[in-house]
Each structure stands twice: as C-alpha cells, then as structure tokens.
Image 1 (spheres, helix red, strand yellow):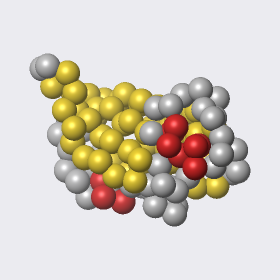
Image 2 (cartoon, one colour):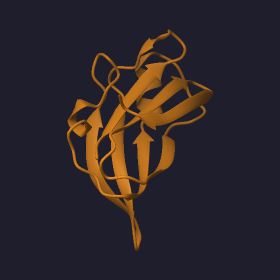
Image 3 (cartoon, one colour):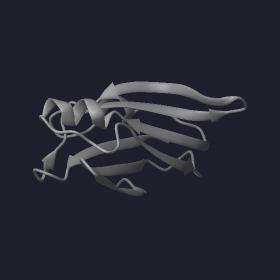
Image 4 (tube, helix red, strand yellow):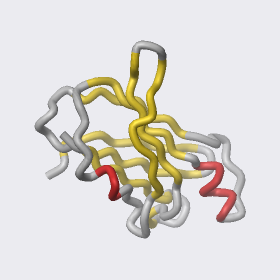
Length: 112
C-alpha cells in the first residue's frame, strides 16, 4: 500500500509548492515518524508514492505557517494534522489538502 499526498493553495487556486510535510504512524507510546518531505511544484510529496505502509493509524502533518509566511501572510493554523486509517495494504490511497490562511479542507480516497 502506498499514499499519494497533494497540497493545494486555496488562496491562489494552484498547487502549494514548498510545504514541509511529515508522515507519522501511531505506536504504543504515541506517534512514530515514518517519513518527511516537501511538496514539489505540483504540490505532491513524490517520495511517499512508492513507500510501502502497513495497515494502521497514520497522521499527515503539514507546516502551513512556514508556507504562508513565505507568501507574506499569517495563518490561524501554523500546522495542520490530518489523521487517517489505512485498512488495506494492497490499495494505493490519495490525500488531498486545500490550504488557506484561516481554513483547510481535506479529501481521502483511492488512487486510480
């Protein structure tokens, strides 16, 4: 199973390039870092496309404060955390997050 991640800029209606991202997995004592990356020009974290992940509870953390500061804006959410559960090790999934300084939206689905 793999996960594709994409961040979109809801202010300018484009991909959000340069967003720092961290993928974590729930463990018995809290959260364990799985991988870190940064979105490319298309808003994707390509490093995670081919990474195998087991079933379980995961968390995607996006550093939005850093991203919006680079655009000269302040944000209400300095970090966005999206928690999700992976049920099937054979299915590739896709998480898309639309970012704005004072709101965000997310979608989780099967990658085609």
